[in-house]
Length: 318
Image (cartoon, rainbow, N blue to C red; front, top):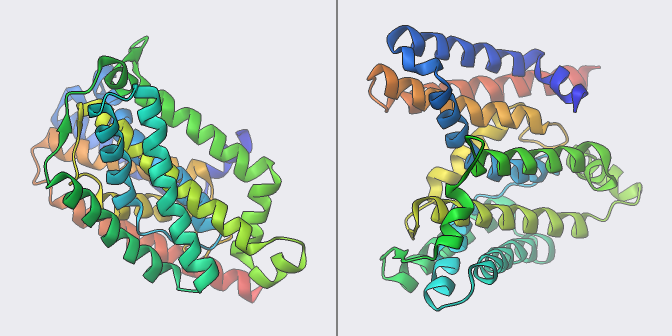
């Protein structure tokens, strides 16, 4: 973990830290509330769900994959859990049911990509549309609510003033970091994303790895939808969607993970997710048009991809 933090303090990730610091300074100059404990906790809470989803997406993209369906899986997880709760299923089992429904979409993605050979962009774009359509049709576009307190407590409670959502994000981030840097699975994911042929020659089974990566991505995306449903006590079929998908992927890429696979860190992704939260918070506190957030995000994303291209070109030259 210390090594990851040192890497996060250099290169592209140092740039993110500087941008975050500048934004916080600007917000504080306009509104002293910006640096208050309550506001900083709210920034972390805002980043938490995106970071949770981005943790699994980081592993997938490092492994050479791409999942555009996570926004629809987000809605599937929340709505499936909502249906089960409304049917009287205990909230613990309803939560598991939502995760299983999400896992099915991950397995479908893996089937389309691994078995049939459809490119990940097209396969997951297809399931994005299918998943989004299914949740709207099954609910007639009506949110589900009336959930038991045990379920809503999952994401609404605090521990010593720290929201459970922040603690979940920290736990999942640590687990993802350990998996990526200290397990054979993480090593194989990096090898697969770096050079598929070489990875296969070294005993990595691409079909098994891709199935695991796409399923994990879907399960975690579904978990994000469940956590939002718990936080707002409503399972909205319109939640997630392309907005969640692209913000998660942008956080991963801005955090230094290569869109071409093989390179990336969970610490960098955490900074990417935090950057989005700080941008939105700064715009809110300074009374600036929130659409500037999209402009800033687009510029930073373009710069991040440009840095990745330069990094790849330098590596190939060496």
